[in-house]
Length: 236
Image 1 (cartoon, rainbow, N blue to C red):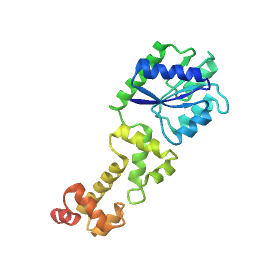
Image 2: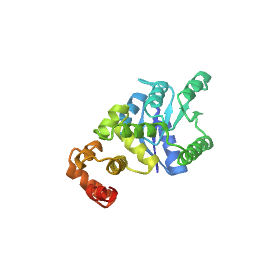
Image 3: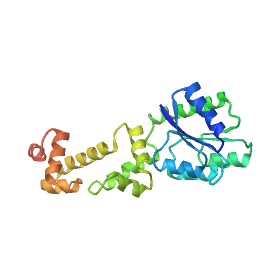
Image 4: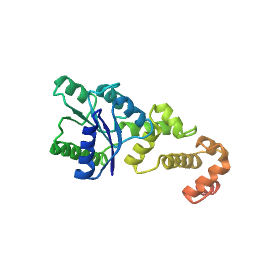
């Protein structure tokens, strides 16, 4: 079930789109509605939708400013722009900001269905391609800081991305929880250090991100089925 956010200042239009998505197309849930970009950003700071449909002209914060934020902070979230203005300048600017498509009001059922199908195909294609930029950023940051604090808060602050977005996007693309991935990378580093160096167990623990050697040994045994010392004895 794809969770959708509709950003539109006219309630009747929001209701119409919601009906199409939930009752006609199915497979979609309109989890959030916002009357302007400002309100939409408040919602996004708490949770991240799978798809966003946004008007282009709204009070307080218009669609283009909202799209600019999304392009900078949440580039992986597909956005469909809806507008009553057949204005080439707006269309051009919207596509520069990474929108998937631009639909004119009143929205035609067939056109919206076509755009959603295109997004669905892109999602499937992503599963067989290399990691998207945000996943590469997360993985690179983890590799560079394996011996340091790798809390979700640290990753969020470093990449300037919302924690919910990081967790959700990482799980969606890798099918692995972020915390489990961090443990796996730390264990692989510990494996290399134990097999290729003469470092003490507590030094390996520290360099693998564990300040407590006992806790490190417990995690290592759960991961490899043997303690660090047993592993080291077998290798050396």
